[in-house]
Length: 436
Length: 160
Image 1 (cartoon, each protein chain N blue to C red):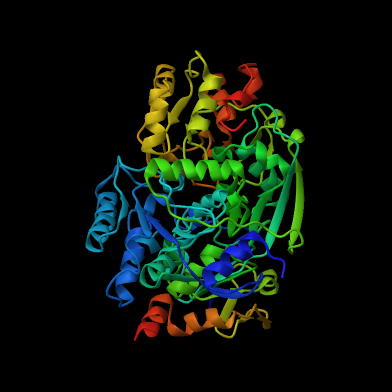
Image 2: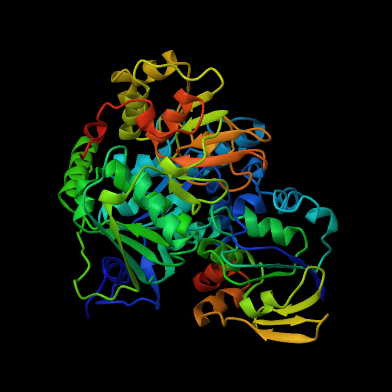
């Protein structure tokens, strides 16, 4: 039977020849991930399940990312609970503060997420790993505790929404703009329970960094997963990471059959996509930044699992050049991982940001979820490179949050208001993109 | 029977339990802030047995299990919504918060109506108007987890 890439991966993991959308299957998990917010409850649930040991201490990743470095005593205790679990069960992949970063950028860097795998994470943005051609989805803590205990998870095989990209991205257009424009079209539940398969010749123009942004926000369309079928860019990235990390594990590459069933197919002509901005307070309220109402900005946040990779920081630095941050704006820059931080430092980007008047911090999810490191106050306007602008997400419920790519965010930081990056600089930007 | 607290579409987990309260996993502490950024008076008004009724995509956003735990901890007997975001759906099943998907019932329930639900049967009754609705049937596999009392008990039962 013709199958989608997602059906093929889930069939492999379920030990079946084939599976089809709609059926419930039990799959073997290749990697189970939790962070400092979700791991403590997952550990509690696991302990209550009455099994003596975790199913495989080499296939669990525990990452300190959300409230790190600990912002108060309560969050220090959460970290302690995660650390104790890691020690007690001798978890191989435990990433302490200062030795990791945000999980969704970190695990691909570590070559722990590979094409063809089933990855289950206790964090909704676990859909990010799909950029590598694996099935990955987010669950809650109890579900993850059950994976710790059994190595398996039940899943309803999702229908697939195929998104076909044609053409090539224009100036300032990154993965963020593609996904915002798709969510703007289909809505916040437009891909509910579905796999979003990003395909077409246009994908070939996208760097891995941009692809990871594309799959990262599948959840903001209600999707179960996002996936990019592996191509030369994927395989080059994965093999490079495997070599650097010394983790030459085998993996399997799958593609959808041409006559597979797709529940919905939409087309995106990259030549027509402009830099986008999601207005308060839903990602689906996305419009081209060229048409948005100009508005004074109090805070700009360049960070999160969505847009804090090296390409994102380079793009922001490109817009900034030798300019300064507007005196009325607070800019916070948080590289996603220790590796990204070090690379940005070596390239002089952190110094550039700091010299322009930005606060530059150690890797953490931080301001994205209103946790710490830049919580927004009542009535404030923030442009953020993160993924959610829901009411109260980044702080006070009366704050107004806009979502955009790093070029648009930096343009707002320099101008002091929401503007198109063209208004800041006309220096060609596509060359900044690592894949472009 | 309980009073319906009626909300709209896309009630996300950030308004159900804002991240500033994720510093704890304690049900009572979480319950004290349930739905705080959506309806600041909810916690003072809600009584044991009340029902949350909302539109489509309920529980969208973050995977935080703290969301169904906070709602349940506040004394809510169940949620009736037009549709659920999938992670919230799983989390509710796993932690024992009764949920029913039934857009017809949602359309016919007003804020303050008296409502009874039978989550296992998927039945919603608006006692104020006398109307009864049948929601989406849970898959057998999922119903097994509900009947076991949640995922922890379900896994336990498989291992003994």
